[in-house]
Structure formats: structure tokens, C-alpha cells
Length: 517
Image (cartoon, rainbow, N blue to C red; front, side, top):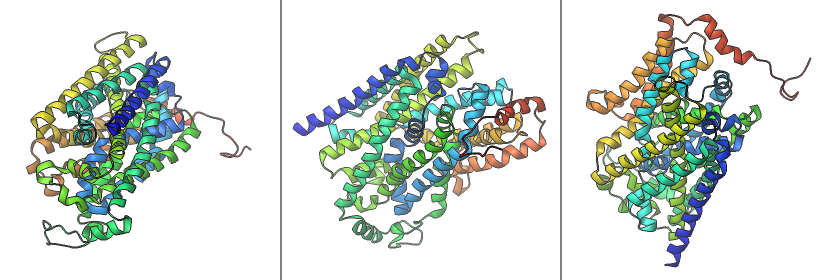
């Protein structure tokens, strides 16, 4: 009884802090720029943690870590390393500065708005916003997955109550304080994630006699379902049993961040050049610890095979089974860790969805002369709507065990990144990108993932996996955009020069960065 009381106090304290921060940040959320971007004055620590916590949710900790750790063993850690190097370090280095400069030049607050202004195309903006709206909803609902077993294990609370509690409290602080409240809460949640993952890894490995003993135990495990029969030591090997599909996982979960609206939007709000440099380092280290730690932990899942029935309970049961033998207070820490990861990502997604629907679809198309005050009010209404829809989808999926919804969630990441990555990247760097190339890539990226969901068996064996198909969509886009741009009508030269003029604007810098004459 005493332990349960301590756990409830921790949970209530955690939620109270989140809500208080949202109320405190109301002064930053009075106009669109403040509500969506925090006034473009967010420092390196808040931006880096907002990026990292939006990147890694319960989907990674419970779902992906369990699934890929079970399939690839300790080699699954490569996915976490890829997330840190490609998904964080290179993303900040390649996209950070240019995204901040050009989006401020256009005064754009969303990715669809960027496309509309960069290519002077209202239809492109509307098309991009529809893709965001369609595919962010199921992705948002997926954040609730994996929480049910952990919450039941720690508090004996029904999953439906957990969903409602998490959705309502996230909605409160996002509606009240907008992006700034989200960024500050993300920082706190990120600290919880950093400490939590280190403690959990240490406890799980200690339960197996330490790292070396756990690795020796993993080396004794074989997979009788493999084509070549039993191969002892394969799950403790450097590249694991299936390196080709592992590469697909790395590409989708790492390169995918370059085209996700809720991730790229973090660069819109960063404060300064110095903040970009610091944020790059902080974000990369955060990803190494959190993502690397999650996949590393999942790699030892087969040591607990006596507690796991994949056929009956799926891969989401792997991590909870690994944690079931830990002390109750530590399990409570894990639940708060997973809640932190989920709430931070949920807040980013609902802001991205509501801002896109308000600014890119309704403003000037349905509602003329929409004021800033009215825009913020409508965005807050949409946040409520998105949270409610996501909760309903998650509850229906849980109660009815509808696999179609779960598959749709898996397709969302690939569709968004496949549609947006190449046009956004080339749009920042290359003057010759055409509107037609963007349209072709939008249709290809979103279309191939919908087809993969609808008629997966018709795809080549390698692309039947949504993971591999999403990775293929992103890589193919890097070829589609330049090729189509070469053969379609060139953009207006004056428009392009005006767009890229922002990069040539003179800015004084310290002598440590550039010597004066």
C-alpha cells in the first residue's frame, strides 16, 4: 500500500508540473508566431530536447525496441546509432540553419506553408496540408500503444483511463502555453528519459548477472525459424541475423526525421547561430543515450523468452516482460519514462496538425481575413479535436484488436517522410526544383505507402515490409525530384532569386568565426 501511494504521488507531481508550465507559458501564446513557434526565440537546450523527445516516443521504447531487438539481437543498437548520426547530427547540420533562415524569410510557420511560398503555389500548400492531416492522426494514436501493459503492471489502472488521462493533460498544457510550454515540458521529460533509460538498462543487465554475462547468454540463443536452421551466437553478433532488413530500419527511423513536419518545425523556432551549434551537439548526445539505449536494451529480449509469447501478445510484450521482475518503484519510473516520451511526441504532433489545418487549409481558403487571435483560437479547438480523435482510435483498437488500424499507424511515418523529405531538402538548396517535381513526389511517397497497406502481397518480397517500403520511398524521392525537375517547366527566375536572397543577407559575426580584413 505504501509503495502504491509513493507511485501515485510521483505521477500526480509529474502531471501537476506539466500543467503548471502550460499555464505559466500562456503569455507566449497570444499570436500565431508565439503559439506555433515560441516567437522564434527558443534556445539550444530547449530546442534540442524538443527535437529529441518528439523523435523518441513509447513507439520506440516499447514497440520498436522490443520488435527489432527480438529480430536482430544486440545488432539492433545500430538503429539507435543511426538515429543519433543521421537522424540528429546530420539533420541539424544539413537542415538546421537553412530551414531557420528561409522559413523566417517567408514568415512560414508550417511545412505546407513553406512549400506554398517557396514554389508560389497555393495548390501545393493545400496538397501538403492534406497529407499531413491524413497521416499524422494515426501516427498520433500510435503513441498510446505499449502503455497498457506498463500501466497495468505498475498501477493496475485500466488502459482506457490511462489514454484519457494522458490525452487530457497533454491537451491542457499545449492549449494553454503552445510551443513554449511544449518545449519546456519536453526538456523536463527529456531529463526523465535520460535518467530513466540508464537506470532501466543497468537494472535489467544486473538481473542477468551483468553485461558480459548477459552477452554470453545471448550468444547461446538461436532461432530455429531461420532458413539456415539454428545459428548459435547470431543474436550477439555485430550485424545480427538479417543485416539487409536492419538497414531498412536504420534508413526509415533515421533519415525519416528529415521529412517529418513535427521534427523539421523545431528548426523554425531556434533562436540563433550559436543555438544551432549547441543544439546539434545536445540533440546528438541525447539520441545516442535514449535511442541507442532503447535498442540496446531490446537486443537482450530473447533472454526473457520464457516470459514472452510473441504469437499471442506481439512484440509489444517484449519490453514489459523484461521489466516485470524489477522493483515496483523502478517500474513506476519506467512508466513515467514512457509517459514522458509519449506526451512530448503527442504535444508536437497535435501542434503540427492543428497549425497546418488552420494556417494552410482554413485561412484565406475557407475563412477570409483570419486574425491572429482567431487563428490561435481555432488551433486550440483543433488540438482538442485531434486529441479526442486519437484517443478514440487508440481505445477502439485496444478494445476490438483491429489490426488494420495498427498497420495504418506503421505506414504514417513512411508516407510523410516519403512525400516531403526530397522536396523540402532540395527546396532549401537547389534553385531548379519545380512545382511539378514536388507534386510527383507527394503522390509517389504517400501513394506507395497506401498501396503497401492495401495490397502488400503484390509488392516485391523486400518491399512488403512497411519499414522497407518507407525507406524506399524516401530514397526514391531523392532521385525523383531532380529527374522530374529537369524535364518539367522551370520555375520563375525572379521568384527563385527572391527566395534564395535570404542566404546572401549580410550578418556580422564574431572574429572567432570569420577574420575581418
